[in-house]
Length: 156
Image 1 (cartoon, rainbow, N blue to C red):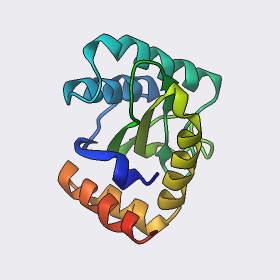
Image 2: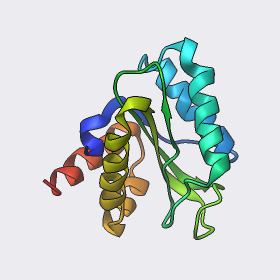
Image 3: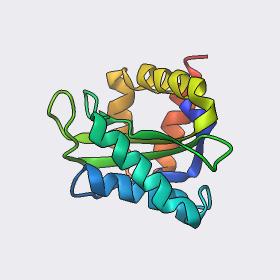
Image 4: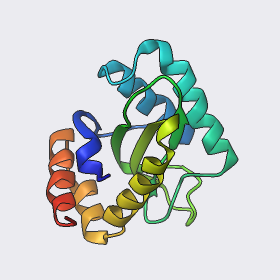
């Protein structure tokens, strides 16, 4: 599933200011709760699941991208959170560079196949340097969301 199909404009955090990847995980989980996509009662469950996944192996990719994700019980649909950190955040990425584009995914445990396809779609979209540069150059959530909607449509 494409990121543009999953992403709600209210779940774009821009600019993200975080001290490290653990702070990023806390902030994206909090954003999901604050915007009503995730019940407050599931904050700890989701936060712990994202932290556990991250401790097992970094979700920091290359080229300034991180995709923290976890499968959890208690939700019906995938929740996607896009965060843009123009200054970058230390995330233990594969190439050692700070993460500037973070896509958090909270996946219903029973939809693991969707999870794999979604990760592949996001990686394909963000593999394009031009798209990454456009996202980082945006100055607010609305513009970042517009870039995802427009550029994701090119991969129909």
